[in-house]
Image (cartoon, rainbow, N blue to C red):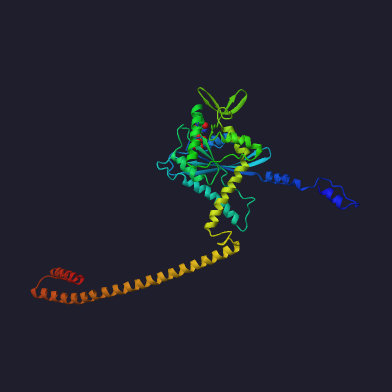
Length: 410
Ligand code: GDP
């Protein structure tokens, strides 16, 4: 305690009593206050076929109406639609962005369906990197759009994963935290569901797809997370409507034979998913930063930046920048010279072509002119001697001229 230290050092001196506790143990409180004031952001990407229940699940998870106009099955390519909301719980503000795929799995050729999703995730990393590299950057107030978690919706077929699922998850597993979920899980029986879950996990392992594992190194959540990792993929049910059961309104789906309660853990895993997302939000955000670091490293290396030289000697950013600038200027100079040379060469070629064409064109025209004049005179003489009409003379003239032209052309 600082007050005691000061007391001991100044033995015998008069000290003022402190009006409040002073110590750096208040640092976590300061951070907490600042974070609460700033709010938190969390971005979720939902990938799945059109109508698999992405919007309904999001509404159920965050008890907010995320319903938007139903997407059609006739889009020529996959697109991503983002919606942002601010949700408040107690005094904590969460800026939630929900991004969902539209048109996923609706095309005849699905080979490239994953590309727009990869591009979207990369574009968010790129935007963050651009902000980071700015001279006047403001990362504190920057709206971070990097995807923290991807809920991958698997169709409740009870069979195996589709090619599009494997392809998409494989191309994303090094960029984002993937949590696989079985959508519309109320359409599959309980025993079939357990078998289906096992089959999915085996297929993911055999195809080398890395999914997000809830962390087990923190002892406060280790037990719960270990159990939950065994429940993956989550079998989820979503609903936009609330049904009155007893004197409570609950999110549920009503069928002629009964009611599926979204919040009932024996009916589905929706509550488990919500609990896991909330308790591991910070871990998901941290892992996203790790994926971003990977992206940043590759991007900067491509730009020619490196921390060490060929002999492991440290390289300063300034040196790298200067070298790059010089390289760029030399390249520009080389290109400029190349363009100049090409231009001169083309001008010379054109000039030679024109000269040749001029020579070729002037000779026949001149000869033609001479010959045509002589024959015109001759024809006119012949016709006047024979006393023939001027129309006959013109026709004869025309045929003679065309014959001469033929000769010159040859
Ligand atoms: P999205 O296109 O993936 O966002 O799908 P929506 O959330 O708009 O849902 C499409 C339709 O499926 C709607 O009629 C929903 O009521 C229904 N639906 C959503 N979730 C579930 C579910 O868990 N089970 C069943 N059976 N239907 C669902």
